[in-house]
Image (cartoon, rainbow, N blue to C red; front, side):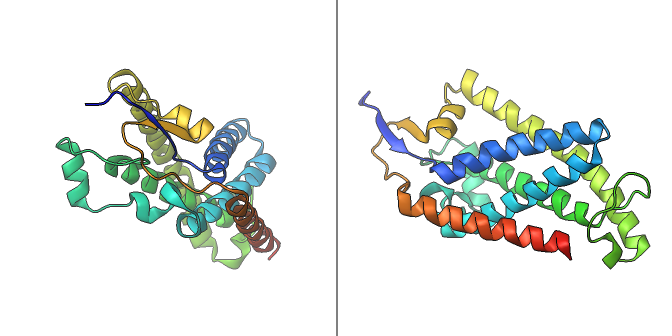
Amino acid sequence: MSDTAFKVRVWDLPTRLFHWTLAALVTGSFVSVKLGNMVWHGRLGYAVLALLLFRLVWGFAGGGYSRFSAFVRGPGSVMAYLRGASHGPGHNPLGALSVLAMLAALLFQASSGLFTNDDIAFEGPLSHRVSGALASLLTTWHRLNENILIALVVVHVAAIVYYRLRLKQDLIGPMLTGDALLSRPYPGSPDNLAMRLRALAIATVCAALVAWIIAL
């Protein structure tokens, strides 16, 4: 077996910026709510929602391994991976489930926050558009979902540590530089100026959409 390593562009710049910006915003959102600064908690939540909308669109309009079609697989692929089957660049079948769970939980958290109303420190911009009972229910679910998010983040970090220490695979480096050293010359993700301008246009539209929702 050859020891030759091939440098492959796995993660394009828009995907990497999304990942690290989302991590920073979610951390800030968690800290702000614990400090009782609901103004910034709301602002950070709106930014998270815009980012998530971008990622959903980028999962179809992006290129390479950032597309959902590149890593979302059925139960058979997950079982095969658990039995030791190899996989190409990007998220493995089990990691893909973690990514989808994280995106779903964050999307619910950010969108439900629009309707929350604790009658004390925060009132979501759309809380007046639903009944008081529904706003109260969404506020409760919003708080409960925080625990689910914390659990998912812990699992995510634990997986990164496990892959680094046990499997000798660096998952952080490629998300920083975009490139991974692989045993085969896989095709790289497109990461040119045209793709980046496309991402910028999508992000701008998503931000404008969230701003419009807030202003309703």
